[in-house]
Image (tube, rainbow, N blue to C red):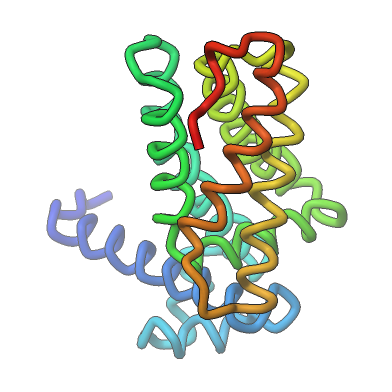
Length: 206
């Protein structure tokens, strides 16, 4: 069997990546149910046959696209979680860093992430990926709660993530002309403060 040159493999990786990016866009805009080989190929600007060359089925393409979104979520949050674990940031610096990480997420990835959440109830292949995303968010929240002196950071992390996800979902459903950073910062400060009430010196100054 002839060995394919590196340029051919690089071109193949680029085409596959372009298809995944296109699939994410289609999923975010139209939903998983409306994501087809034809729609993805058209968005990527490639022949229809290209999708079936790289992915055995539309389900495989959808799962891989959503997995790449989850990979991006984890890659964005893990370094911040590790940094918070060192304990070298103040409570206010922690809050600012968490809000910056959350509000810096591309809207298209947020929409695709919520599509993955819903699809995971019907697609077992996505359940583990969704759990990875939620776990990454919970680990970040738990690290932040440790910084502010939360009584039970592990349990409190779920409440913090529920607030974050609810905020992001509402932004998608009803975009408002408000300062999202300020709104989320205020809400997170209130929640983090409530978990740090046993240690007044750790409270975040408003």
